[in-house]
Length: 153
Image: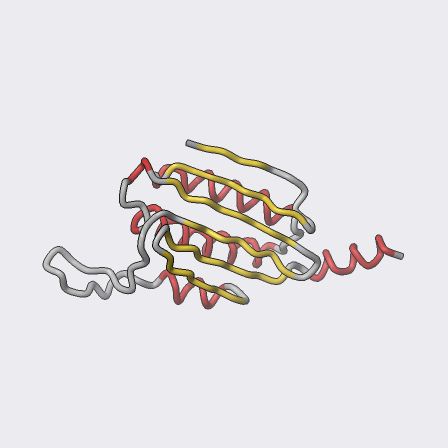
């Protein structure tokens, strides 16, 4: 399953839906490139966004899809003159820690959220009965502010 509604992002919304399969992570990366370019992110911002969204999407596919490929993962992006916000929503329950086969906490995993927190201006995780929603916010590049100001003159 793959659905994409592309639009001009400034002061608008872009939605992207995939089937919950790890093979779809490449599509997400391509789509984040599209979003980042339309929101004038610089190279570092785009890389940081790729890593943060990749972590959130991988978690949504691995942990937030109780029915496997029958579940879907939704990406939604909004961009204004100051911030780009990307939300990743799955259909599963949030896991506070990863457990091994015998129920023990596994300490070699679970670095995705700290990584997202380090790379983004803001990270919020909303736990609900119908799924988990991760919101990632980054500031848009200064070049967008300058070009927007010049366009308004």
